[in-house]
Amino acid sequence: AQTVTQSQPEMSVQEAETVTLSCTYDTSESDYYLFWYKQPPSRQMILVIRQEAYKQQNATENRFSVNFQKAAKSFSLKISDSQLGDAAMYFCAPEDGGSQGNLIFGKGTKLSVKP
Amino acid sequence: DAGVIQSPRHEVTEMGQEVTLRCKPISGHDYLFWYRQTMMRGLELLIYFNNNVPIDDSGMPEDRFSAKMPNASFSTLKIQPSEPRDSAVYFCASSLGIEQFFGPGTRLTVL
Image 1: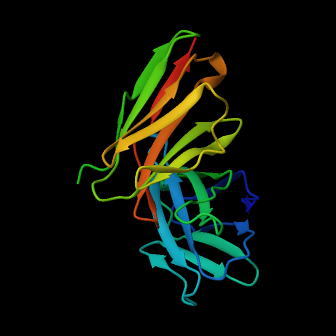
Image 2: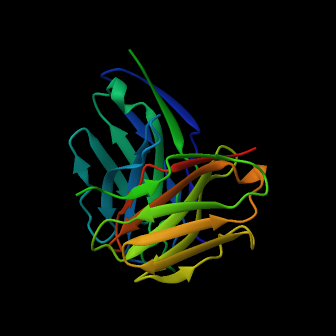
Image 3: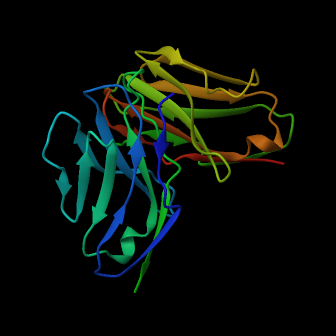
């Protein structure tokens, strides 16, 4: 079965600073999607950003960007100019290569933002 | 668009009772997923459907759990009989085969 590893159970960042959340995964596929989801205390799962594996350019959405290293199977999320509202659980979720439409979720990283 | 709709938002029941959770996916989406989230086990996929057909139910814990999707706009997850260890937040999500859009979840407490 495909595995996803988020090695940082908890992270902390000062408001306005930059933080990077790491994620590594295992897949035998060559073309797939990867996602980062955010779950604030409200518990709503919110899509943050997506990356297509065949695209070399790293995805960017406003203050959120990824560092996608396909050969290393690494997919980190960078949050710039951190805001208090960024405090949440962040889940890395690559597509399950053996099961179209399905995603494999990591255990999550809890991000705290200090004012 | 209303997004994925789940009901109820909260459910408290006693051990042994039947519990039914409901989900309305985003119109036009052809994939529907049921997840369970607990502190201990994180987010677990229970079952998912494509075009109303169950594709993978290997995550369903045991025979007490069943899920149906009678049409493209409605799905249920039933637990019978419920047990205290079933207490969790249950999410429904839908997609067109790429990113998934989640409902607000149902917090289930089994006493």
